[in-house]
Amino acid sequence: MIGEAHGGHGILRVGSVLALREALEGATRGILVPRGAETLEVLMELRSHRDRGLIPAFVEGETDRFLAELCDGVDLTEAQMSSRAEEIWDRLQGIQWDLLGSSLDYRLIAFLYSRPHRGLSPVLRPLTGRVYLWPLMEALGGGKVDPQGWIARLADGGYLEEGELVERVRFCPFCDGGHLNYVDLCPSCGSMDIENVQFIHCFTCGRVGPKEDFLVTGEMICPFCAARLRHIGSDYDIPMENQRCRDCGAAFSEPRVSCHCLLCGQWSDPADLIPRNFRVWRLTDKGVLAAQTGEMQSRYEVMDTLNYMKPEPFRHILQWMLNLSRRPPVEPFCLLSISFGDLDAFVARVGLRRAMETLRSIMGRIKEMIRTTDVSTRSEHEEILLLLPKTPLEGGLVVARRIGQIRSALPQEVASTLPLEVKIASVPEDLEDSADVDLFLAKLREVR
Image (cartoon, rainbow, N blue to C red; front, side, top):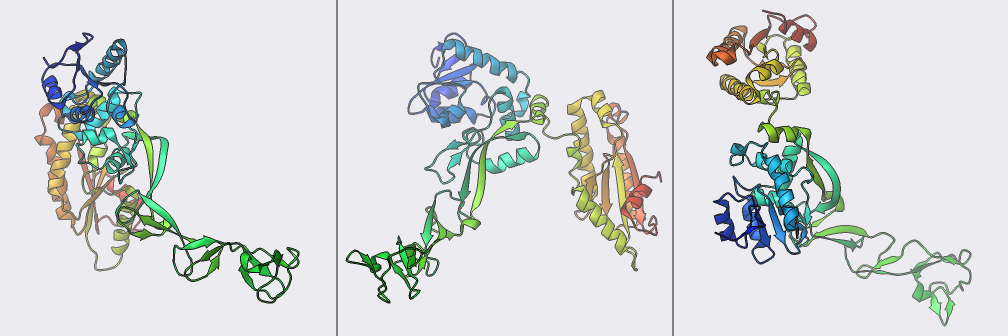
């Protein structure tokens, strides 16, 4: 026994990494970590565990923000710990436990799903080069994954959404460090040895000089022309220039600002610094669905794996190829349309997990048939458009036939519920006089 079960709720008091490893071999439903030398190591070890890293964890005693992000509560009563642990376990019953060990993305999403009132928050660590750290991501990824890139990828996939902005920090363009010193420099010679000086502009001779040079026994007398300066605005004024370089003597009102990186020593212009927003991130509805089903891709995103290109540049390339085909010699090419009928009905019949596996299998087989120069997109009709450059009609028909035969290799109960239709249009055979993309696509969708 590692330690006593705290309050009889299956929450064990664990004070060391060794004790934690022993606890995780049992059926503990949570841990309580006393504040001590190994508190951080225990929590980092727990959250990095591939299978049991999501169990509730609490800290006894005062702690900092970094540790608070890794645990589920600080200095709670037995009743509070028990209640919170039960809430977390109720949510954990709805995740796909078998995916925790194989998918780091899923582990993070499942953690946020099991703690619905929490977000993914950055924590200030001013003594580090990155300034802000992501404790949970550091722990889950074992310190081997770039948190910013990880967040960007999950946000692009629609699993995370922006929350409140915490801070905006600018980073060095050379070393990506966040420790910068903003230095005022002389705009003439670049020296940092500058001083604040009040200048006087004599209206009589037009000369400008430091105020101390004009003061003679309590009177204002121009050192250049000896004129007495009694009234500001009529005899003299105070120029905007209020700084002077002690190296070259230049006077100026605004210094040139440069940024000195205290980590790598490089100098940068402020405009060249890399601004980075640090904000809280929260799970989206798509992220919640992914946690419940284990599917990190939608059924349509699975289709975007055949050298995928966004629709707009795809149409641009297709139009360019159609325009080229108006000039001899004509370079043949084919365009295929691959559709699966009513995917919603297919998912309803076989279930989401099996439907996704089937689509991935089909996409994998199609990918083996095409070349790296072939590109695809997905149209508003939820069909895959596959462009085969330098491919005559005979070659395109071979590819279309092989794709159509994939369905016969599927299990009977799946093949009978998933229609797979392949259509083909080719140049020069289907080229209209106008060489318009929309007309060519309309020709493609006619049954050949």
